[in-house]
Length: 149
Image 1: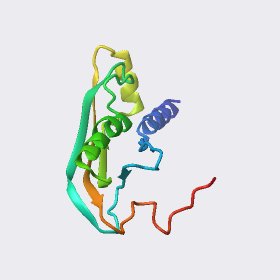
Image 2 (image 1 turned 30 degrees about the vertical axis):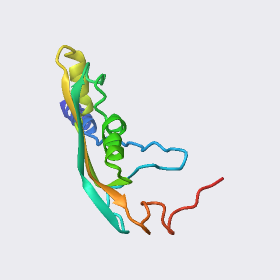
Image 3 (image 1 turned 60 degrees about the vertical axis):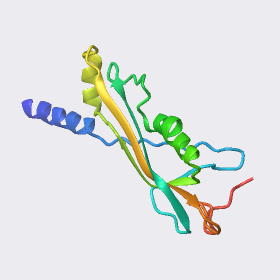
């Protein structure tokens, strides 16, 4: 009987360490994406305008509440994209994302220990580029999927 409890406890601990996947979407304008974001390089000619980094720091209250907005979407929308637009860039290439992640058991523990906030941080880094004549943003080349009407 004790072996079953140990096995059950082991399974619960293993399930608590599952991977989470976060994603952020670039908002579209009337003319399509006004700024593209790519984790790769672009094929066509471009001019590098510099490296940009946006970091948001805050705390998670009760293990889950994020009043500072330290998620990737907030970091992208409120900090990174405005910097790219100010620099006059068409997009960001070689983007790297980093965000603090906590397992479910940790979040549950800190919801019980509500008076101790969990530190949280989201960082996005990339190279701002201005596309030159003949270059196309990723996903807009001849091999891209046609839009449906």
